[in-house]
Image 1 (cartoon, helix red, strand yellow):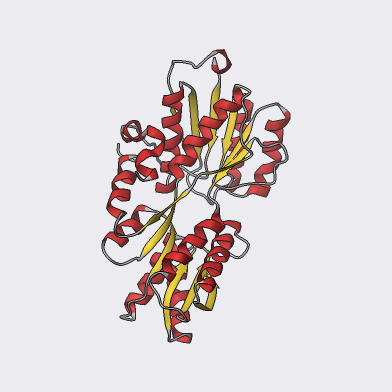
Image 2 (spheres, rainbow, N blue to C red; image 1 turned 135 degrees about the horizontal axis):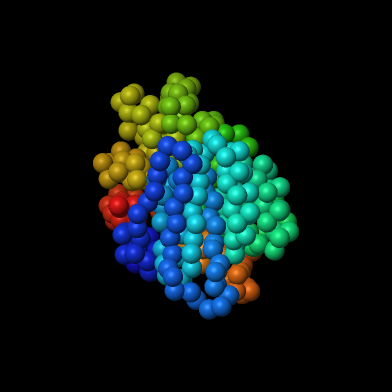
Length: 328
């Protein structure tokens, strides 16, 4: 059975959850009045995400709320209206700390900016768990997220399986210095070169769909024999695909993230595949391990939330799952 169908045994509950979204700072809560032992009595787990307004973060929120219901703990989920509101996220973190939560689960938008606030939490004895994005925080309890190098490797292998040895390929990365997308590109490049492909172009597109379209146009202009493309995010992959289709070409494009839009494109026979992260599981594991930390149980310092390889064969199944966990 596929991992996203299991989803830690809580998909059915996630399907009935209410996902909050709005145009200002956003907040939602979930949980149960039934407590799991004295350690959790009166304890709330604060979850601060990069935003609550995008599908990806709604999946994370749904996972956190499912864990709250399963484990009988109160969870307070907050996040700014957009990922660009870095200072707003810092303010939200500090507000949650002032409420003395039992644990703090955070996905830092700009890690270096939030570290001082997170240090305040650890100094007060509040366990801090990071999800999706890591930060240089000395006393963090754990980091839960994707092994991005591995995700890139799997993407490279998938692309290579559709090509012939010696074919020329292109790589499109995120913003320069973005650790996650940089690692994905490194993994893909390694896998492609090991399979005998020639990487003839590698350019950043800043995780922007429109910019990726322009970057792909330039790559095609300068490299007439491109036979495949690996892209470090689904948004960029869809942008690159537009440029390829505009030229009337049929070049397989592999994305990364597993967004609903990308999965729909795969079903339609356009995008060749994507390496999906598991944001729902990140949210669930964040709360699950926060409960362990509150209870004084051992928590691994690094928890891999896993990846799934999505192709046309399993895309419909994936899409149904994504819809189920964001259903009103």
